[in-house]
Image (cartoon, rainbow, N blue to C red; front, top):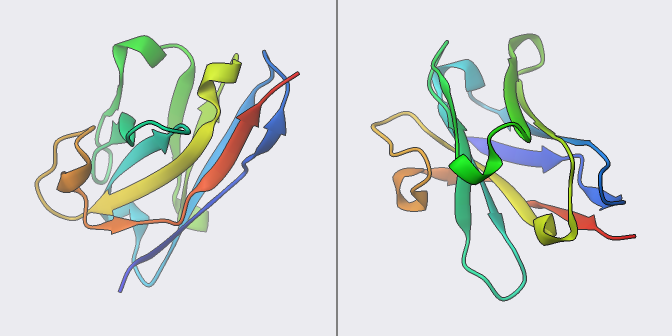
Length: 124
C-alpha cells in the first residue's frame, strides 16, 4: 500500500518562504497524480494545487497563483511544494494526496491515498 509522508512544516514569520515535501514509499510518485490540500482551524479541507502523472501539468487555485510552485524530484521519489509570501491566513495542516486513476485536481474524494499532514503556522 502506498504511504505518503509530508515534511517541512513549522512556524514561520509572515512573508517568509517555506518548502513542503511529500515522500512516498512502496510506489513511484512519478506515476501518480498528486494533490495538495490544507485544512485551517475550524474550516473544511480545501485543495489548492495538483500535478498530473508523469510529466503532467501543474494546476493552482486562482487565489494561489504565483505563491506556490510544485516540482518533482524523481531521484528522491518526492514532490516539493514551494510556498512564497506566507501570511497568517495560510496557517493550516497541509496534506498531499495521490491517485493512479482519473482525478479532479482539487476535489479530495478523487484521491486514494493521503499523508498524515504537516502543520504550518504563520505568525509574527
